[in-house]
Length: 399
Figure 1 (cartoon, one colour):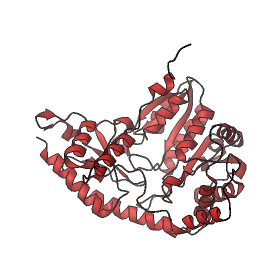
Figure 2 (cartoon, helix red, strand yellow; figure 1 turned 45 degrees about the vertical axis):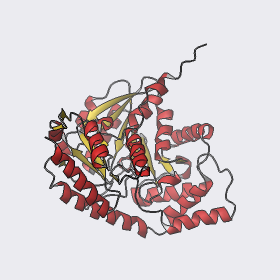
Figure 3 (tube, one colour; figure 1 turned 90 degrees about the vertical axis):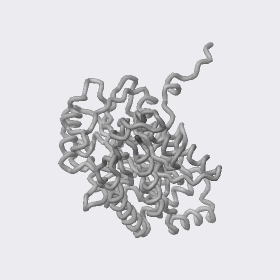
Figure 4 (cartoon, helix red, strand yellow; figure 1 turned 45 degrees about the horizontal axis):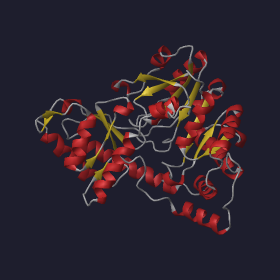
């Protein structure tokens, strides 16, 4: 008998974002004034009407198990949200409620991927995608987007990466970490490739309501029956409703896929917290004023941060169109030195910023672009100004 641990588990990279956040929190606990741009969550509290619905659920004793794939009430609410916001028709039987968007994606890869199957991942990408694919036994295949195209790979690039082992494409719009959005025309071209080459599209639309510049969010599943049958649409309430800790995600999929995902979830986790499900119903069915208020505040911060970054010589960036991140290139700064040593990597620069200038940025080697960092503007204007002052001071200190 061998006591070796799972090879798949040993090959998984720890989340660099969580590691940096943990170190920053420890420094704060030690009394150090640390400014953070690492957060992948809104700084707003969950709207009161949603919290009230959760309290009511507790008071009424809604504290038992629910169906593993979610309550019918919540599935109905998600179905209606898909219809109104995304222009998609998913019946409740095509919907599975999961423990956050990350769990929804894990479920999808578990159901779609067989050992050796390839999953195309446009880069830059959210760092968890390739690890999820590998845990499911699949092989991540990266396709790199060019800056002059908003870091979005073209349909031609995607088609060139297709092989006879290609099972799926992950499509994240608005994108984390770039904040860029795929246009309807770009999605139509990608859909044509997916249909003609016969692979699935995993549409991660978690930031779908955080869109700016008069842009429109488009769901690829709405571009025709052929692509609809090949798409699993994934979203959740974490970002748009400031409900990160409630852990409510969901998918809409062809019925056979939704049924399998529900079966997998029934054995792995069973249902999402019953109280969180009641809160989610209120979030989707209740007033949407708070969602728009948060979106407007994010937009104001986005514009302010763009103005400030424009005044920092070594910062190379595009103004994001959605989500709440800036993707900032620091290639010129990496060639400089600090305390007699060449900086070299964004990871090293992030370490310098945290240790000596007490500001948190996320290095993006694990996002596929080692010369870039991600800055979140899911924080106050005051924090944005203080943090950017520290970043500017750090870059100025480089020789």
